[in-house]
Amino acid sequence: MRLSRQHDLTTPSVSARPLERIVVGIDFTEVSLAAARWVGRHLARDATLTLVHVIAPPPLPNVARLRSGPVPDPESRLRARIQSMGGALRGLAGVIGAPGTTVEVRVGDAAVQLPAYASMVDADLLVVGGNPVIHAARRPEIATTNRLLRQLARPGLVARSVQSSLSTVLVALTDDGVASVSAAARMVAAPSGARVVALRVADSEPATEGSVSAGPRDAAGNAEHVRMIADAARDLRADLIVIGSQTPATDGDDVARGLARTADCSVLVVPQAAGPVAQRRLDRDGPGMVTGFRAPGHR
Image (cartoon, rainbow, N blue to C red; front, side, top):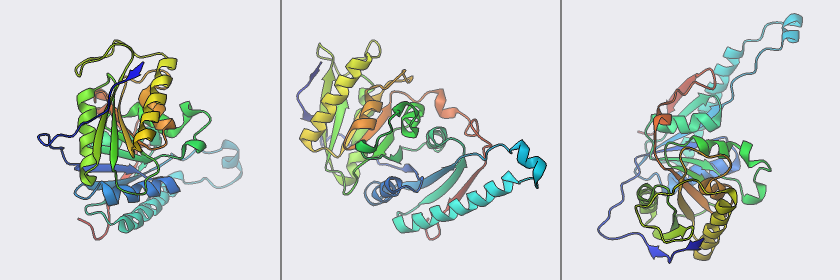
């Protein structure tokens, strides 16, 4: 394995497509709130921003309790919680202050609902907050973010260490969707005028821009690529790594998911292709109750 020589990817003759719609997953943790504020300040200047919170479906009634007391009304409780969380999201939207901000509350598994909603509204970007690496889950295969990345049909950004605008974006050009990865990098870098640096990662022989890998690498090969790209990002002091993801998702971590889990900076994962997964039903994993709001005072 080797790294190619780094080079600037931006050229005067190539204009970036502007961000038009951004979806941000909000679970009201500090990292998700920080990510939402950062997106509103630095990425969503001319884009429609939607804050989405996902509520877990209510548990099934306990049979023993049903015999000993009044029958609970889970639907009423759920509706009340949806209304409460919608109000909290509207308050957050007012703090962020981005024009055109809307809010959405959904019911189900966040790892499924967020990517599915981003696909349904044809979002340019789905953003979720990323915990510091030292706090990463001990079992990443069951972590919500890791499962979410397996469902992506739109570019997904794991926002980590977001204090200022982007200054340097590192594009890791493996053999997974080179054109779409480069386009996504330019699109995200444009609002801040960030420098975009391309880095080719090859297994052995030099790869061409149009090459496609013959198959997924083994776990050791993926881990080595993750280490090399993360080291390059630290050397460049990059704020964001952009990389393509293997599609369909393979068992274990591919390079993109490994970086999203272990890199010190933010990581933008670009699916190789948006196939039928984008058309999946949003209520597959739960009762499917949804409600949308537009933040007061916004367009």
